[in-house]
Image (cartoon, rainbow, N blue to C red; front, side, top):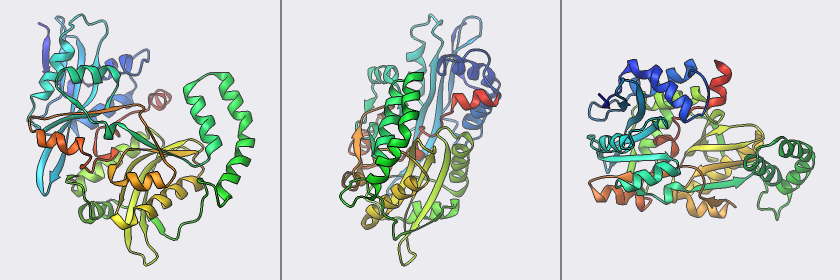
Amino acid sequence: MAGLRAFVEGDVPAVADLVWKVLHEQPGPSPAGLKVYFQELFFRNPWRDEGIVSRVYEDSESKIRGFFGAVPRRMTIQGKPVRLAFGSNFVLDPECRASMAAMQLVRTFMKGTQDISITDSANENSRQLLRSLGFSVVPVYSLLWARPLRPSLYGVHGVARLKKNKLVATVGSLAKPACGLVDALAASLAISPFRQVRPTTIGEELGVETLLQCLNSMPSKQLLLPEYDLSSLDWVLKFVADRKAYGEVRRILVRNEEKKIIGWFIYYVIPGGVGEVLQIGADSPSIGKVLDHLFYDAWSIGLAGIHGRMEPQFMQELTQKSCFFLRHGSWTLVHSNKPELVGLFQSGTAYFSRLDGEWPFRVDATRLRNES
């Protein structure tokens, strides 16, 4: 008989094959790396919660046709715990004729014991479905900030991403020498918004214990904060680093001239491409210095630009540092029976970096295919 049931570890191969076929649009069986990904994310994560369960949808022949992953996370409001559940890898086989299966999967997810149901990786189809079931779009956390570092190369990179064909790739390759000259000038002219100056701050490798101390002690005006212990923080950092969804992960602690810790940043590095920021932290007076250090660090290792999710507490400084803002990619939506919790997200008073949500739990299909 068709219906929903809890996702168990024995379902991993079938769910991985379904996700590989539908979400990644790849032929054949899923690679071993994707199966390991599902085992690690749903059965080894440190926030496992009996009240927050992933579900599969089976047809009348007991074949898995749908999946809705639930990833628990934790935050606090002035020290009081808040349970979050992130929707992850939501997929339904297009051959499945059970039109209500998608709604059943989402509604069952919403009935979990979490205080907030949330996704920060919804596509346009998911956004429409979730809104119809009572989720609210969170505009501020659905925006990106962007900072070109090599403006002409950044422009070529953007065009190549929009128009993926051999001609554009060839023109882009031929243009790189000229881009190099223009970008070198942009980085050196005093009047250029893209000028790069070596910061007076000091950068060093950011360890897990130090990051935990920073998260627990760095002053913040945000009311809703992520909650980690050493084990959970170490797990999520390793998970992200091992998957390399957007390149290698770089973690830097920033100190001022007196060697006092003033902030940190974590981002993906793709040499010659655009880096993706996972998390920025800073004490309020030093936000500008931490951003300057981030941009110089990314420029010095060859990035064309760098992107991050909108972080309202940094918006003024990001604007002053020649960043621009855009709506592109994933949507963030939330649902809760407690309107005050939804309000904290809608008002931008949550310290909610990409590292603290479902966004970093992504996979690079190309890399997985090459490894298989």
